[in-house]
Length: 271
Image 1 (cartoon, helix red, strand yellow):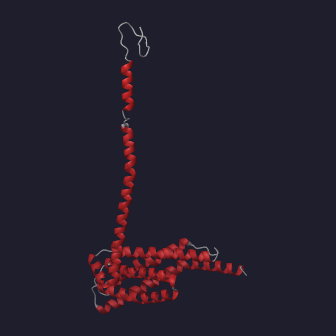
Image 2 (cartoon, rainbow, N blue to C red):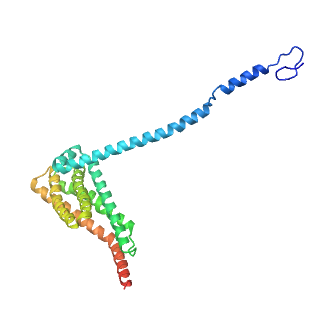
Image 3 (cartoon, helix red, strand yellow):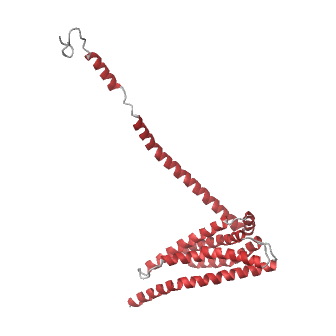
């Protein structure tokens, strides 16, 4: 006995299931394939990762922009009201803001020094080998080193002359001066692109202003006799300049001599 549809041999009384099998097969072909749980998780993770990265980048950019705006706002307030801002910062009794200005100035100076050194080396056709390690040390010494030294000297001599102050207050004073320093550097660098004469005039003008601003800030940050403030400020500046000058000479004289000898030998060999 055989099935009249598919021709399969059947036993006595057996019913062929070929019709039902064909129906089930058609249903399975029409039914959409469902991805497994593992595939769903993999797809979900792949979609979630770019989303998290984009969200992190956006949040980081927002925070960075906020910090820049806050920093520029502080700079603008100091340029507008240097003495009042020194009093406000001194009242907070923290050196965080002052150190922030000091480090920003150091970074700006370091970038400009490295760019200038590379430009000089390129101008002389590579005859001058720039000692970048020494340049880095000298730059940090004359920026962060000098500023921190001056803050401690101002605190020490301010107390020695009978005043009442703290090292945090003196970091505020030095930080205010650092703001004028890096504004001077940036403005001069920009103007030098258009006119060297104008850049020099602006540089000299702001340079004459800075000592007056710092002394006024120093007076606002220390409680002492007004006559003694003058001498405390003067002795602090004098000691800072003398010590930093000696250190720069001891560290940089060999580097400067090597660069000058290299330049001289290259000059004479050209003839």
